[in-house]
Length: 307
Image 1 (cartoon, rainbow, N blue to C red):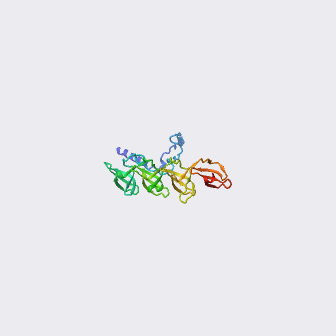
Image 2 (cartoon, rainbow, N blue to C red):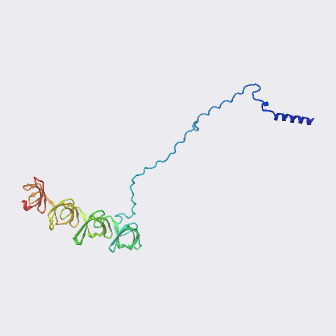
């Protein structure tokens, strides 16, 4: 009996396993009701954190670049802490100082690299080729703004040589504590060094004659050259003058070679009218510049011709 029950169960299971798909029960096939589709889910409420439509990413922000100068002005390197004119006022030299050495008829400018402990030796780096050399400290001078004689960087001056026989106008480029100055010739631009005692400093007026820079003066006759009017370009110590002639050329004159203007000479004064014409200028040596009232020409006449 037991075996019969087992056999019946096996047959029942196999019959359901091999059943066709059409034999399976269909939901709603019992006509108990129609199958309704599932309702659509409502859309999720809008959220600030998650927008409905995808938004494009914002463009990448690039930092603003500073404007670039088309012609940048070169910035000069800073000078050494003690290497500016006027930083030192004595013969003591320090590392970084601008200095000049005069040795055997030659001169060299450069920067101080080192100074010996006893101060007797100074090592310089040359401005010309960068070479390093050592010299005795008494040959080396530090760059000053002005010398004790009043010679200053940028001043106009006069080089006096051959005991006052020759003169040459120069511009002072630098002056040093060892009594030398670096100069540039005004006429040629040539550079060389001079002892300060050979240099005549410029001044506004000469105390002895009262002739000043910018005045119109009368140059005395020199050799075959006649008298002529000139303008004073520079006045130098010792009574030396740089003048511009009526042709535009430049020349050197000394005290005694020039006559300054005065208001009157022996009762004849500038502005008076006479039969020769109008007196425009009067000079202390008795010469008069007279303008012809008809032609406007100027003539130079001495007092003896018009008295």
